[in-house]
Image (cartoon, rainbow, N blue to C red):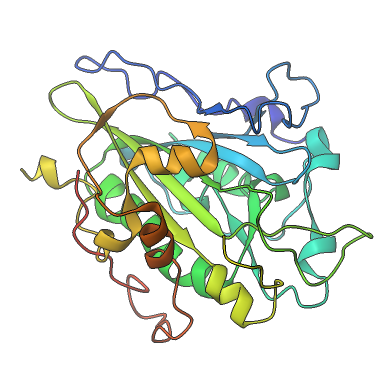
Amino acid sequence: MENEKLYQGFKHDFLVDETVNENVAFPILGTKHKNDVAPVDGNDISIVNYMNYSVQLSASRKFPFFTASNIDGGLFKKANRAPSWKKDERVKAYQWGQELYSADKSDFDKGHMTKREDVQWGETPGLAQKAADSTFFYSNAVPQHKELNQQIWKSLEDYVLHTETRKKSLKVCVFTGPVLTKNDPPFVTTVKDETILIPIVFWKVVVFPKEDGKLYRVGFMMSQKKLLTENGIVEELEAATAEDELFMQFDDAATYQVNISLIEQLSDIKFPKAIDTYKDERSVKLVLKEIDIDPDLESFSIEQTLGFSISNIVL
């Protein structure tokens, strides 16, 4: 595969320097998922490596359990958008491609789990371009309603990259993924005679160092349940210091910022240890209600830096 030699993946020692001596491990799948990991050609640990990020896939769902990316705000470069999406031959049987995204009623985007611009960095513009292009594999995509993908989720992604990481030349590690559960609603259209469950909840965990040499982490969740249901895309189921302000100035954080332990509980994924400074006293039921994006939110303006504001992020 072209550029495969450059696909070294997520670096565990990415944050190590003269003050930080801790590696950042991959998340660990729990008992619900550990026997459902997609095999990867030429890789014994079932991790798909790309430039500056890696992916672990669900064999049964054909979506990522998680993506893990290294972001170097000081080496960010401008790059062009890749012309098209493609399947990764190393995991070709374990990813949904155009057969899903062009199906009848597929009114959703190919939602990047690792954002193109997050890994769009390197010593040269050419390397940054190749890294950006490497995010356009279906192994890095999950269906997202356009109002989530292009608005509030994008606002969170832009906040992490541009407001904090790039502007302050920080190095951070970001884990992103969907909550994969058997209770996810089915897509109304069968694809290749298969019923596809569409993830409705997405999470993001950011791990970053402070000047004290310690690692900290924050987490966010958003839901597209209302967006997908009200648009008839899925079947409706029955109910079931300045430094201290890092990653905390995103509007509506009181709604979308959550305890890492809640993400672990819902996703059945354990994240690498770091210091948690945010404490959420809301119940699980209330959190899941409040993170669900309202289809009646005002329309997105392309002229806005952020599609919506999210406030009160705590770091």
